[in-house]
Image (tube, rainbow, N blue to C red; front, side):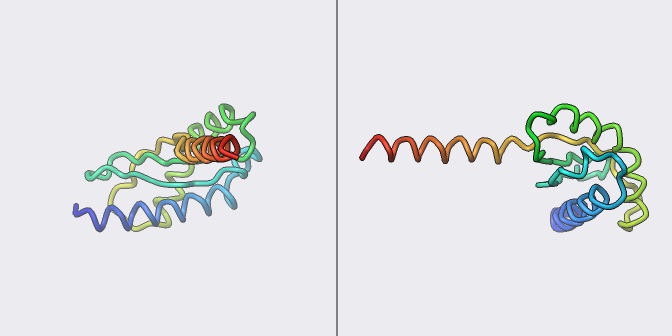
Length: 115
């Protein structure tokens, strides 16, 4: 499958999974999750779904709840996205935003020291 199709699917998955998390899932913890990215393998067998969590103290329990709900979410996706085989979903915490915030804070600290 070509990379343009995969990119389009990644984008569609982010949109649809976000909608499912906000409107279809009963678990309250999952409602405060933001889907930041999706990475589907070229054979469509597996999809890594990257998310951030609003409440950092509940990060681990939220990630657990997401991965428990993965089969339900996959089932919902299969009804919304027309592809022959809906990939297995694995939810992963997106560290990149946290990393970016740390770098931003370091830059601010350095600027303050220069004054």
